[in-house]
Length: 418
Image (cartoon, rainbow, N blue to C red; front, side, top):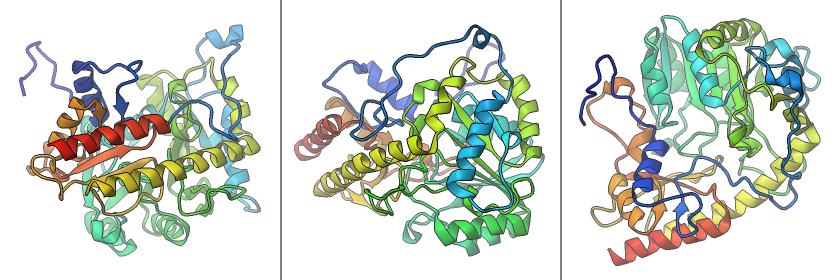
């Protein structure tokens, strides 16, 4: 890899999705081309779904919204987020979230960047594999030291509580960062296990930062349940201002509005104050005109309706993808319990298709995009010499069914004709 030639600048790596989209564009991919199938995309289909609320197609912007907004978002929206979590997860609990426990940001990565900037000189635990964008996030800020925790496929890519306790006590972890459900494996910490995670954070003084952007894409319940099954650590927090549990979510996945770039962070007031200070110099605040439009989307009945439609649709697509991949001799170590990804094990495929990079490159010839598994081996500053997950690929069932069918047919052609 060539080094920068302009003085003072470093080579900034692309995240996995950005890399594959760049390579696909070089091969002629455009979003308008109906021959391509983007099974690498990190967003759900954004059109109408049966039973979902009508999609927002028009937005009215008040003159005041043309001005700068508050760094942590409008109070009305923050209170709406707090009310939603209280309604969904904290009924009859003495401690309730308020607007002071919420910060609005311009998307999930901005929210996580604010949190990273507010951390002190500590050891932070993170899992392998996990969200590809965490790598650069954990590299840029030098105050904390990222400590990897390897997840075992034999354990279903979920860390046993005993392992986490050993890591926290042995390595002196003060923060643990995780996506739940996990991108890319789709594995989920829920119920009693999640309650114990929160208890562990409370008992051992280790903050949990949980990326819950896929928390409505849950497949461990019934696709026709009302209300639908949604998972959040907020359910197990005792004191919203004392328990070290910080949750990040937003409109991107669970509401299927990725282009709006609206996210929120939920946690103790002390944390919200710290990330407000970070946001004041990092990004200057979230999108102002869209915030008023979000209020109706956070009405509990609207949330339930959208989630029911998502689960009905994505249950079907999940089953279809798992069936097609297995018919191609592609293994799945652990079926996704959440998200819209399959962590595909390519080991049984003939060489060189059993390598995620080659699998991706050959797929481009069939106009199909996937994401090589090595991008999820979160390795800040390349501290580890050997990359893991070379034999894996993340395959998304986020697109609509026709795109999914076209993409899987392309992968099948690639494998059978290689």
